[in-house]
Length: 614
Image (tube, rainbow, N blue to C red; front, side, top):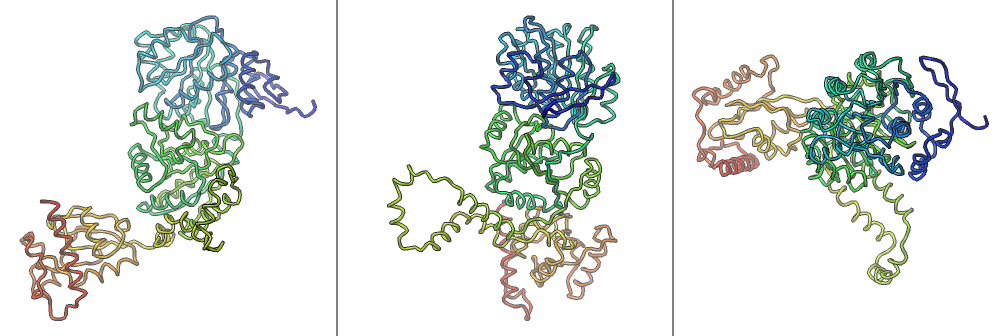
């Protein structure tokens, strides 16, 4: 046997021993083999190595279990093209895909494999585009239809195609199809097929119980090939996690992206709105990012995917559904913005990286409340997920500097261009030493990062700091909404707005949270400050009162009565704007100039709000 691999296949019938090293040994049609060679495929992947001999030599139902990115399309596409009779212009094979992107991806791969088969016609049918164009394609009698379930049913109901001659039905990403609720659509499509013998090929990354139910219903003694352990993740993927308070997740995300200068990755979100919001914020903050989700038109989705595939887009923010068709070999990182609702999605998501023998990183940004679900993911994938500290500002700057100098050392100089300007450049820099040139160049290159990170907080310290809830006697009747209140509090205390959280406003009082270390700042900055004719009151919130404010109001009213003031919640009168004007006579004899400055600052904020509302 020489150096040939020995593949042992366990099937329901008997054990088969097959030797296989290259595609040329499979006995594929010359046109298909020529296309494979033109594409540059030399050796089959493990799922192809085990599936192709069975599907090429047998007419049978088939189950192929393998992770995303292992070459499943070729595993069923090559034998399908080998078996189809392209002299007959009727649909002989139907491939169902859960998403538009995956549908387009499959059709594109099959067209590459069938490029030398003159009579081959492959129709791609999915929602979001014109039915008329697809109807024309179907009327030409394609031998293979690649479709999403919903749009396929639309065409069948309109009698735009006929599935009575169908011999092969392929369910790609079957587990995801069931997760998306397409079980009834699959049943309905199969009712349009004849009762004649046909074969079902099912390919999936995981094997939930619903898949077994489908197998029992539609298949008869299927052959089964499984690559690796079920519900496991590829060994060449490094699994990491960062735990952060939910209010600082976006800050942690930026820190992680900055820490990996060469990142070319996907950020997965739970919802379409979250994907759009994060993408917009990243773009605003200067990152090369865009969103991909179901609320975008098909034209925009195609444009985004084109930019991502040609690497003119560095970061894609996507939902699970929209990302199902992404088949890009060079993705370096997958970032989970929270643990997915369906923990099996972790496997699908992570499978977008570490393709074609490369390594990859799967990163989870999770809150403390999600740590238990992270353990469930570990149990599912049977792999330890390492929890790491969030990179500090110093970590990021150092990592990027080292990366820059690595590129600097390895860059290939284009003498044809440089020689034209070399003398001018040297003349401009003649008064600078080598060290000065290097330092100035570094400063210029890293100005954005150093400016951004010079006052950056350590998110690990912030994450571990205790949050305290405070009560304040300012509410909606003072003309504030939540945003305005946070802006005012930021101006008065210099606490960053992103660190003022969980604001709950009532008519005459509010609650908010800051870190333990910022608590004293709030008390100090708002001491002896008046809002109209009453002093601002800040107190620790009483947890036992369930934020009813009762004990806080009573305490504050007692303090007010000691100063001879009325209670702020009895016959509340909204202060007039003139009440906000600063007058020296309103201050007690002991008030300092700094207190006067603070109150003027507060009054300025109220004036801005008044102008805004007017």
